[in-house]
Image 1: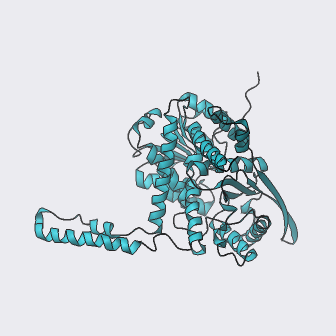
Image 2: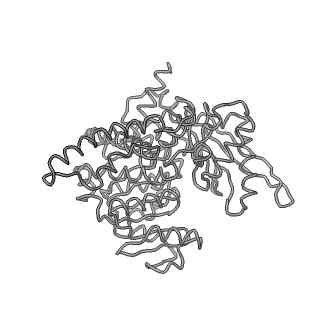
Image 3: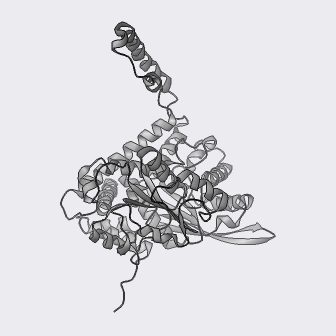
Length: 476
C-alpha cells in the first residue's frame, strides 16, 4: 500500500483554501476568482560579474487586485520557483485581508544564493532586478510595493528604492515604492523587529483567553513556558528575544541550518545570535547540547514550538512525533496540509502563519502611509501630549506637598507618564491593536460552532469573506 503523498507548498495552500470555502456559500465563479493568481511575471536578465555575464531568473506574482497596491516580500533563495511565489502571493492576499491592511497580495523572488556574492555584486544584481520589475510597474507606490523576505533586508530595499527613484525622478512618493527600508532612507522605527514582535503579540493575545489556552492543554500565562525556535533569523530571533526578556519564557532549544542546541534550563538567545553572526552557525557554541540533525529537536517536549524558517519543516514524516501542544507559525507554510491534519487530530493548536507573521506587513503598511504623508508619526502631537500630562503631574505635586508622608507618587511615575509617544511607541501600539483585533475576528469564527475546529480554517474564513466582500463592492 502506497503512503499518502506529501502535498507541495502550493498544494497545501490550495487544500487549506478548499477546506474553508467548503464551509462558505460563495458563487463558484467568485470562489475561482479569489483562488487564482492574476498574473506571474518571469524575468531573466544578465549582469556582467567576475569577467563574464551571469543570467539570473526572478519572479513577481500578483495574486489579487481587489485592493491596490498589492503587497508582498522579495526573497533571495536558490529554492525560488513559480509555484512557491504564487502560493506566497495567495497567502499575502489572505494575510492583508485578515489584518485589514488595504492591499492585495503579491510576492517576488530571485533564484540566487546571496552568500555567494559580495555586497557590490549583490547591489548590481538587485538594482538590475529592480529595473526589470519597475519598468513593468511591478514596483510602484500605487500598484506594487515589495518588502524584505528571506535573504533580503534593509540594504536591498534601499537599493530598490534608489533604483526606482532614478527611473522616476519626478515621483514625489517614490520612497513609498518599497517598505522595510533603513530609517535614514524613509524607513520606520520598529520595522526590523515587526514580524517577531507580531509573533509575541499574537501569543500574548492567545494567552488572554483561558478557554483557548485550555484547548491547547496548557494553563497559566506565558511566564515560564518552554519554547523551541526553529530558525534564528530576523523573525525567530526577535520573537525568541522578546518572549524571553519580556514574557519570562524559557527558550529550551534553537534549531539552525547547521544543527541544533538544547538546554532545558534555557538558552541565551542574544548570545547565540551573536555567535551565529560571528561563526555562521550554532556549531561550537560553548553551552547547550549540540546535535548535527537539529530537526530532531522539533520533536522535543515543550509548551510552544515556533517554526521561523522554511516552509514544510513539519510534514507527514515527523508530525506524529511533534509533542508541542501549541505551534505558532512564524514562517510561511512551515506545516504542510498533511501534517496539519495529523496535528489537529492529536489536539495540537496551531496559530496559523496568515495571522502569526502578519506583523511585517502591518508595519510595512505604517511605513507606506508615513512615506505618502511625508511626516514621521508622533511629530505633530508628542510635545502637546507631554504638556497636557505635565498639567496633571503639577497638580499631583501640589497634592503631594499638601498630604506630605500620607501619600506620594511612585518614584518613576513622573518620568513614565510625562513621556509622549514617539514613532516606535506608536508603531508598537498600532501593531498590538492590529494583532488583537485580527485574533478576535478569528476567535469568534473558531468558537462559532459551525464545523470550525481550528484557527487556520477560521483565519481563511475571515480573510476570504473580506476579499469576497471587496469583489462584490467592485461589482464582480
